[in-house]
Amino acid sequence: MSKTHLILISLLVMSLLLFVGCPESGAPPARDNASEVDPHAGHAHDEPEAAEDSHAGHTDDEPEEAEEHDEHADEDGHDEHDEDEEEAEAGAISLSIEQIRELGIASAPAGPGSLGRELELTGEAAINEDAVTHVTPRIAGIISKVHHKLGDHVRAGEALMELDSIELAEVSSEYLALLSRIELARQTLEREEMLLGKGISAEQDYLEAKQAYDEELINKRSLEQKLAALGLSQPQIEGLTDKPDPNLTGYTVTSPVGGEILEKHASLGEMVGPETEVYTIGNMDTVWVRLNIYQQDFADIRVGMEVTVDPGHGVEPARGVIDYIEPLIGEQTRTAVARVVLKRTSHVFRPGLFVTGYVEVDGESVDLIVPRNAMVDLDQDKLIFVRSGTSFEPRVVSVGRQTSTSIEIIDGIEPGEEIVVEGAFQLKAELMKGNFDPHAGHAH
Image (cartoon, rainbow, N blue to C red):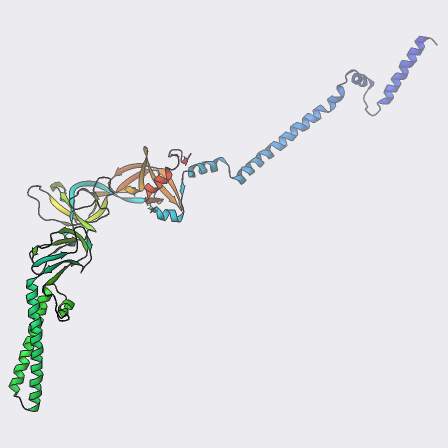
């Protein structure tokens, strides 16, 4: 054979072998040639399926992941709404029951009330004359000893000073002599009664003896009353006979009441008597506050009205009630005087202190009112503490009309919420221990 015939036979064999090598593909020989020419054609069958599977997988899985994320958010409680609530409660102050008691915190529901026009009355504090006692000796004498000085507190019946009294000595001597006469009259009566029984003495003698004895008993009662009027107690009177040589001139001036010595006019060696005021003792638990009422306010002021008395000088005001209005008008001042019996809440309330009284008249109903002590100032804001158990939340409020005791609340709290009415300043101090932004609603 020629070379040409051999080359043709070889090409034919190779074509047959290639055709037999790909029987399962079912593809025509032309495609096999194409595959042989393009080496990447084999990957074209897999890529569309992989891409299709990939997109399908993401489409099914992404909603499940979102739902799973929401479930975790619910379980952990960290959704946006809860975070806002946590921030709102972050500024609250939590205290123990013991701390609340120590700080003197008290609360009450906020609600409607009456708020009216406030009158300002000037006045001064004075001694409560119903609680003052002027001590004078009941007998004349010379002061031999002084037991107490100005400002001392004494009890009822406690000795104030000692006197040497000639007058007392005379009355005491007369009393002792009378006791001797009574004893003699008693013995005479018993003897006459015995003689009468034996028929020795006449009945007339017995009756005269009995009359004499009765008269001496009457004199005894009279002298005992005189000694009691001089200030001697019954044990002291009876003690005159107990001592063999009693001091008949000694006299003790005692305090008739308990209280503080406000005035003292007693010195050793001084002669005093029933007309001499040696001590003034007063109970200073209360004072009188005398407030001046001007003519234009006569119709508004009545007995029983509550009054806030402000002494100034940074002292906490006190509250009292008008218990008396003097019926006469001062000729020079042209004012009447309203009297308030005021319990002393501070030593600053002393007789002679000038004060200002505030009386609320023409009250009108308002929807929400709180005591003035319930509100505190923080920078430019006004705060009220709302209580929930042992937690206290500071609220910024808007206020309306105000008096010395009450404030109208326009916004910031709702009726019925429990607010702190005593101890707000102590809570403010606790609040200021951290940096508080009242507009952020939580501490930073």
